Length: 381
Image (cartoon, rainbow, N blue to C red; front, side, top):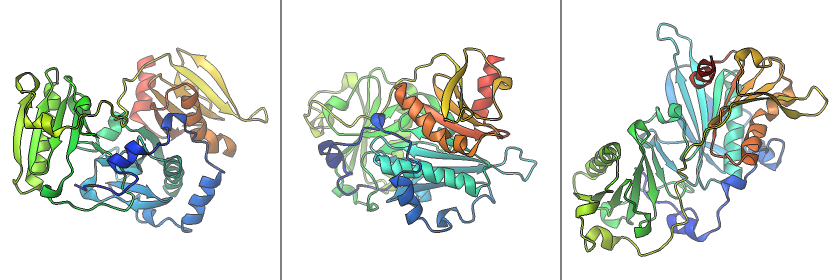
């Protein structure tokens, strides 16, 4: 695993610097300076896309100064909260057919800058164009990743900081202590790096304190069996990667003395301003909107509330299907260029205004398949 990063995206750098607040961000960047910079920095043909679309595969890239840089395969599933990434899953919907399908995601880290995730969004659209508009596009936000996105990895690890200049492999005896937070149930257990302070320990989850040559697994008294199991697997993986050198110890909250070395190693700060972004998803009423420029101006209008079917979708416009938990952008085959160009930016703006930036966004063209999209209408039938 990559270890460490350079300022300002180290743990301390993030805590000291005022970071861009993703909830106050604006995705309507197309046609802006960001778009111009992306176009300027990109070659006539994006090198990262060459050779794609011909075989089943999973590919991940990170955005570095408006450029698309391949992420090492051994790090797939590990992401940094200060970065934005693009993920392409190429698969066969029908094992008996050679036809390929594509899901392309851009993932926004909690402390990724507006320029970075704007570039990721732009490049995601560019990748879809490269694939002849055959991909289903997804926006993923840290802490609220879709089940489809999570299914690509045996485990997801969200680390503090960013890969500003690459990473170095650090010897275990030179490690800066790090606290790993395990939260969730079943396949949804995720791993988040937190600042190693006592205030970040709670009774509902499991934590690993990584001291390099000493690994402590701390089980909160109300932690789930899935969190405990995932943490045990993760601790053994770390130990194996370090050739079995680290000593390991499993601690239960109710039987661990306050004088234990685990507690002594944690700092005495009262507050941590680097949260993982974990929030509970809130459902709501299903609504159908139409983004249309038929009047001469681009307008988003409510078309139906509560109950509607696929027959209500307009082939001449861009449709927003808001399930309360996720927003689907369905691009009709007859939608204008202006409507198509503004689908994703307007979706982002819509969620921002509704105070639900963390909700997922899926963009698909008429005739393309998405299991989540189909499920929305199956539930309504």
